[in-house]
Length: 79
Image 1: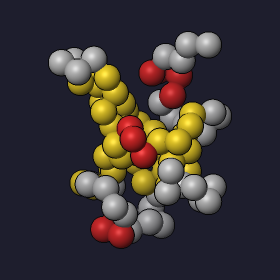
Image 2: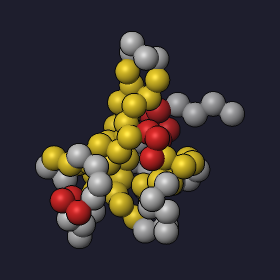
Image 3: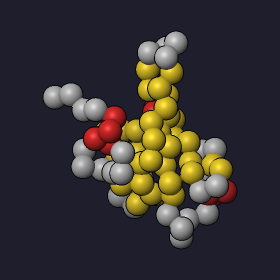
Image 4: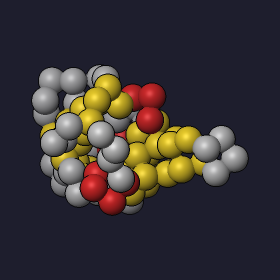
């Protein structure tokens, strides 16, 4: 089954324990590699972006695609 990027936007992003990190707002695609490289996640207001292991700016975290374990009704991260 194919999934289109626009179908993913707005889904909750959860960590490996099922805790909500935030909401998927965009997907970064590298045209030269022909692959997805990262997911941009608007983190919840109750989270401190400085404590997360990924680059964050203005409440948006860049999560490398390698950190995604699976995509279902939510985007599940490996940690």
